[in-house]
Image (tube, rainbow, N blue to C red; front, side, top):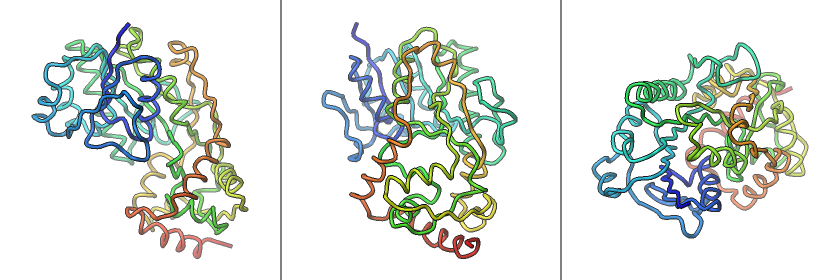
Length: 328
């Protein structure tokens, strides 16, 4: 059966693995974005439409009269963006899959593990509140006009290009060089990391699945690790010894807004998930990349790409200040 899917995005950390797997499983895959990410090239045979998703006129021109069995929207971050995209694509697909975020769940969580029934409420992070508002928009569209939605909430999904740690490439470089690094709190809160190739198994399994219409799913690994353990696995992969300095999320936020916001609004709290719901629909969903394996690819990647990221120029001074202030 010839099935078609349009990925809005498709070369990002979360989406690239799903594009590759959908293609491998026989979907006719089209990717719409402004340009291919060279760190994650698209498989041969995937169609590319070059357009700015925010330019609705260009989007309509690029699409023509085409329709798709599924549309996967990885690039709508606010309700207004989502509404504009749905206006163009909502009537062209049998399933509109919206990528929300597990950071939309109640923060801090009242109880664990998190299920899809957990309340959505993030009083700290605007990104998460925008995702909640986007979900609410789609649920109304499902109820009022039967827009065939599926909502997916990834948690912290990574690939070999991901730094994973707060502090970005600066933190990874420090670990690889055996220098002190900063971990929030006492490092014992639990965090769930999911490799993008594992995420793809559940995500692609939901595409075209009739029982997924009108439903919400999170997709995460069942492996939860303390942050101290995550850092230790990084150091082990790099052949160094972890030197950890602990600081509260508030102390980190005082020296770096972006890092602190992500901690206070998400990563500073234990997050463990129950994936029963998605496994009922996709029974072959099993995560096979533990972080102990995934981190070795990360360390190898950054050994080959040691250059700092331009957007992270202020992180090394922030880490150094925290180490000096709170180190033993």
